[in-house]
Amino acid sequence: MSRAARSIAHAPRGRSLAQSGFTLIELMISMVIGLFIVLALMTLLINVNRNNSELTKTNRVIENGRFSVQLLQADIAHGGFWGGFVPQFEDLTGTAAPADVPTAVPDPCLTLASWNAAYKSNLLGIPVQAYEIPATVPSPTLSVCANRVVSPRANTDVLVVRHAEPCVAGVDSGCAAPAAGDIYFKMARCANTSSPNYTTTTYVLGTPASNALTPLFKRDCVTAADSFKYMSDLYYIRDYAVTAGDGVPTLMRSQFSGGSHQAAEALIEGVQGFRVEIGLDTLSDAGTAVNYGAPIDWASTAQLTSPRNRGDGAPDTFVRCTTAVPCTAAQLMNAVAVKVYVLVRSENKTPGYTDDKSYCLASNCASAADRLGPFNDGYKRHLFSQTVRLVNVSSRRETP
Image (cartoon, rainbow, N blue to C red):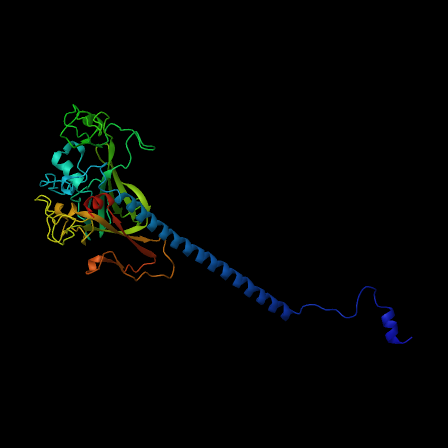
């Protein structure tokens, strides 16, 4: 037997002569490749999370903007609803010069104790009004509603909308019964002058107790007239959400209840800009200016089917009520539409993003004051706008 054969014969069982495995270089290469794979997966995960976060921010901005516009639209659309009552200056069946033409822009935060007949008439004749919070907020207080418009954001507007609640108090489903202290509107419909319940009083606006002193009736002159709760909503932007200085602008609303406007409540956070333009109906179908100091003029050589000295229900121009040029009673009594601009920002900043855009919050942006921005910060923003028709007011002015 040869030496090689003897070596093979005496080799330990279960062990092969040739052994295999990773070399150190191969192991290091595989570890590096694995690290690259893990790094790629981590990068993908981070990017997915970042994209999801940005999508959430964007969706939240859109959601808040749409909700703000829808909330304002729903309220503005009811402006000027008074349970079927039509002011004389808007009544196209009248034959005399109207006696209830608004004489002054009412203070929206005047308490019930200070209301008189002229003030009530102005409330019914001016369903919407607006004023400006200037670039430098007056200190220590504002000239209007200082106890309700608290910490307003500069370069924004305040909007007031008035109407009767669109349901009969205590009768319609979901409409609460009249409560002491709240204000209610009632209209007289009894036209039978021989009825003992006939009265020359056309409406009453007051508490249930005061309204009971002047009972009004429906067309049958027997059934008591319906009561509609008086609604007045004041909207503005506060420069913080929860605590002063937190830097989160918020849409606020103060509602009228118990004889006065109550403390404002926070509605929607992130609303940074709010501007209002009032659509005025100042021309008739014939193109002539309104004139409430004279009876309605139906005469026309052109055979017009609408009066020449009353509006036609369509806005002829839009104006913004500013500190320098406030809106007058003569303008606001002709309001038939409201255009709102709402600028909403994200809750948190986006790393690496800079908002260098400017936003137009006006019909034509003729001046720099009509624009907001550029803000040059990391918040993402979106501008929403909507024109809302005052259906109750504009419809009263329309003719075939």
